[in-house]
Image (cartoon, rainbow, N blue to C red; front, side):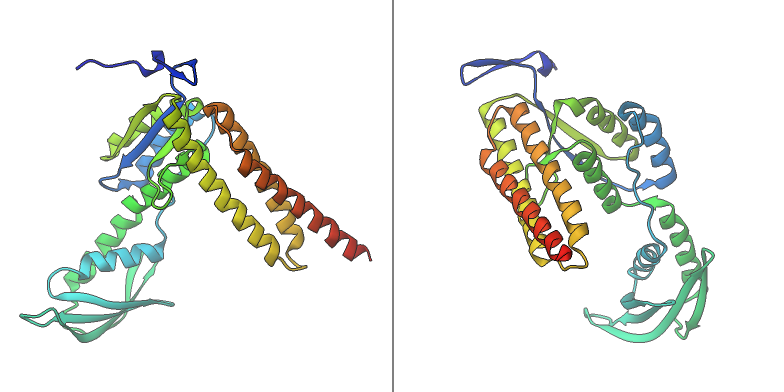
Length: 301
């Protein structure tokens, strides 16, 4: 198979020769979870070295989530089902037995348990269906889940890496999962691509040439992203109270500046224009500043 070095390619856009790529389109396939400690160690060895500082780490599962995941894993097989589980001081599980020959679940009993120093403690077990083997199975499953990062945890971590750290632009407005990452972050994206197969997952990258189609796709997605953020900022400013106004002013003005810099960066990278959205951000910044001045004047009076 012949491989093409995309970095050496050129494309003509609006009569101008553009060399190399402007970044890459990427998406991923997460097939299984991972051991949290091992993954964090490899992030330190692979990603932190390229990034030059500490990358985000996948968040370990909470004990509450570990209990619920373990219950589903243990009681969703055979004839036993978790009808509902409420979390207070302990978990109360209404255990049911599937009626033979139908999809109906007949409530049978209650099982109440909690975790104390990572050990299962039963406060109540009045069911013949909850055996010592099931209790031990729950304990073993809980121990395993507590140390693991599941696929949903991995997905959240991937979004944090690409969206927050690499400043990626989501190209799928409703569902996400497909991002454009600019060329300055290619070394870090390649390191992430190198790391994932060690944990049964994969990152896919397609070089993005600075063509008219690429420019339109990225700037349209960025316009949608910034417009949504700008609308949310406007709503927050409108809903603020005297008690929250200073915090809102400070954080929202900083966010407006961040969005303006992001728009300017991608205009330069892609060679397109986001004049309309930058004008909207400028108007929003002015409105925020005026409200801040009005509030200060009111306090002074």
